[in-house]
Length: 593
Image 1 (cartoon, rainbow, N blue to C red):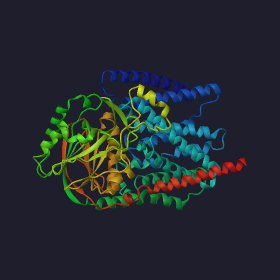
Image 2 (image 1 turned 180 degrees about the vertical axis):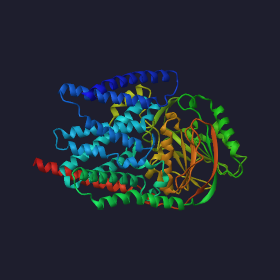
Image 3 (image 1 turned 90 degrees about the horizontal axis):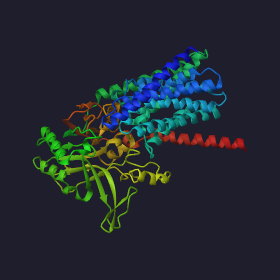
Image 4 (image 1 turned 60 degrees about the vertical axis):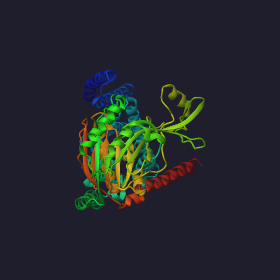
């Protein structure tokens, strides 16, 4: 009863906060002002109100005291996973114990009536908590998108955990192998389907500490995820033995110690001894700092190109090889007429002062399909007199060079679900009319099946646009095409000054380690920086500042094990998952017979 009396004031406070912040966010949007950290407080208060309110309501209906232990364990896992991930503290060692309270809960609920439903709802609560604490900032780009990302991603995670429970119940001898296989398979699926949202891939949790994970050049982030899951399982088993009064398993403690210490020690040794390889290239990175919601796309392009070139001139000289501009810096231009486009003409005039200079920039573009040319899935139509023109729109990157008038175009191909791509179009076809009526489009953006590399006399550069820098195996496609360095073009101001843009930058450090490729990163606003081949972030700019930075990067030709094999650990997990699920289905059918 004491706990119940404490919960009522908390309910009142969270309700007031939810109503007040909802109104405040609405008012700020009407005044074209950003929300900052308000969505975090709004989501936490709204979720706390919903959960505590439902717990008290169910208790009143059933006449039983609420199961505070169940709620506490589920909350503990969500908080530990949230605090272990980049964004709040972070303290990634917490990821090694983040699943343990939920595993304790699963073990305690197993065998109870309606155990599957209780475990699913508890897991959903855990994962909503984790998602809120780490990805709440998505709401700054669009409130509905933020809510959907948290709700849907948590649902997928809860299904994975519930499926593990069902498998462990049917095949107890398998222990916790299904959890590891199912979770890694889920993360791999999340990298490779229309609703892709791999932000919380477990291996990303070490992104702020690249010195700890130099071994990602062999395993990629799935090596980190595998380590985190194994540590959780082994520590949980040791806790079970202690609780049951059993003698400590020294062998398992030795394994735990080795897993905790040896990879980190090897990584620190590799980090301290690694030196960037390759030939030098002088690179200038420009951060123009246009707020994207209300400013960037409303300022005349003539003013913007003047601003870009003024910044470029500050650090560019005859030794400069490359200048990098952010995602969607200019546009809208047809791909066959890029050289006739005003800002491009201005850039080419500027480049004449520096014969060796190349400019790589993001560009909004479109491509008109010629008669007889195959159409992409992103085809759209418009009228040109009596004729119908078929075209696709692009989030593109281009390279300008004094050596040629030809402009290579790379199409961003890992698209953000929602604003850039209508997900699961074949299954949600019935929503096309509604989306069109609301002013959107189900066509999405044009893409390409493989990565491209911008080659010149200075080197071979892989152009990665924004979201593409989160996908490890996808990113290796640039290297397999011959890229000696990667230029990341992004526009991170959509999320305001929140952890989102910092996480995005830190994930790029992992890509540098996996491929041993230097990175030049240009953000419209957010953080522009250079990243060396061991993942160190160099010369980071501040959020909300206009900046230009310059550094010498090394163009590397060496190929890592990860570039060759990609997400091998994840593919093994997928194969294991298929075997486990087939076995589970066969067992179920055998019982029916």
